[in-house]
Amino acid sequence: MCGVTNPVSRPTLVDVARAAGVSRATASRVMAGNESVRADLAQRVAAAAERLNYRTNTAARALRRGASGSIALIAPSSHLDGFLGPFVGAPLQGASAVLFDRALQPVLLLDDGRNSAPLIRHLSSGHVDAAVVILHSESEPLYRELDEASIPVIYVGHPTVELDPGRSFVDCDHYGGARMAVRALLEAGRRHIAMIGGPPSYFPAAERVRGFQNELDEWGVSPGPAAHGDFEMPSGSRAAAQLMRRMPDIDGLFVANDLMAVGALRVIEASGRRVPDDVSIVSYDDTVVAETADPPLTSVRQPFRDMGARAAEMALDSLVNPQDYPRHVLLPTTLTVRESV
Image (cartoon, rainbow, N blue to C red; front, top):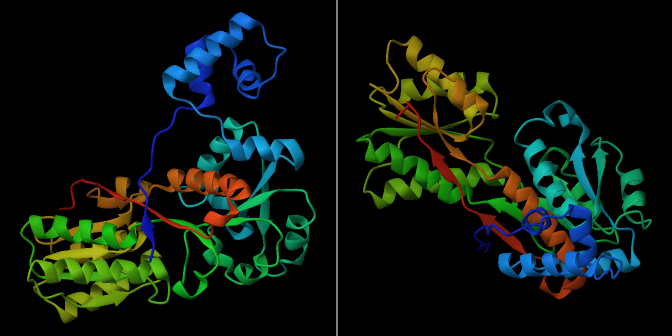
């Protein structure tokens, strides 16, 4: 069972430096106990830290004393073109910000999905002290091989329940997000609601189907049919056409990602029905695809940056509190309301 942990906004070293009117480097030296800083500046930094309730990270401090001072951020090379997007870029930004704030160096490592032996050797050779793995569902064999690495490993997201034991994850609440999406359709008066899900073997996709069904059950509404796609736009079009044949009176549609939702939107409007007048749509991920659709899509937002940040914090904490791991942390989703409902 995953424990739900709400994200907490914490003051950063940059906040302390700004409040004290000193550079980040000066604040870092003071918080690290460096006595070379002028007494008046050190007092200002200490006062600002106390006022902001800033606490230094003991894991980062211990890491700097006796190890490499670097944390690996691992991503699949197949997603190099997505490093500016939400699925890879946002978690990388969140994790990097945490590490930079603690004066640690993130090291980007790529997995090509074919031969992970060089990556495992690098992780086990003392070059890094822990690893955060992002979008590893694209290279699932890496899971088993990372068990051989002699360092803590934290995953952002997880694709299958079978791979949970012994591994630490940060993910979002896919089940709760799906219930939120279906609730928006129900509150809009929709009662003939179907779903386009992702691959059934993929854990987040299965959780979204479960949330879809349970929310409808709680409202006493019979779940409509579900079709499945591969998270790409053409599969959303095919699934929508199938659902409209199976449920001609469909008036609400929950789609498990934005790309498939755009594919479904095109098929629905090509049939002569209008969104949202005749059919309401809620999608998932809240990417630029949802924002730029016509009409713009109401969509469930995953906290990708926060997920990366929390994973980095866990990687550091696991170095000094290994007894608290493995851990599974879920972050809440939110709903961005636009014009498709």
